[in-house]
Length: 155
View 1: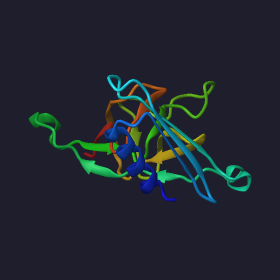
View 2 (view 1 turned 180 degrees about the horizontal axis):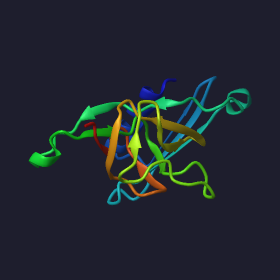
View 3 (view 1 turned 30 degrees about the horizontal axis):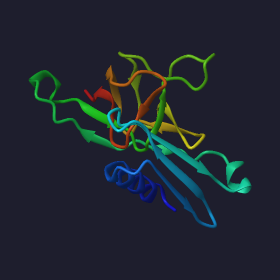
View 4 (view 1 turned 90 degrees about the vertical axis):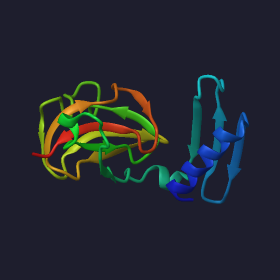
């Protein structure tokens, strides 16, 4: 089962109003539980086979889309969005420094953050060079697919 299929399933379950859905295949076992519908919280649990769980986490590249920002001064900024659903972390571990700060100059391929999904930590790399203008998500916050994470000035 591919990540896009899992994301589609989560969106479908959330919209359907079901409180819990379980899916089992030979490869994967998935349980999706939605919390209080007023809060819009979704709990996602995936158990993978023993062999796959010990494999290193794949590195996900962040898609970069130009931001449709209304302010004239921000029209040249690029928005880096989350490629997956998970928990956003600004540093690799609690005792390490932040990957980037506002004002940091980044290059293509630099790691900007980590998103934990299904107990796998995915490094999110920049596809553009520039300067971090704004960090749009707090550390250790849940993020959705395609949610804006950073604003980058490419000039």
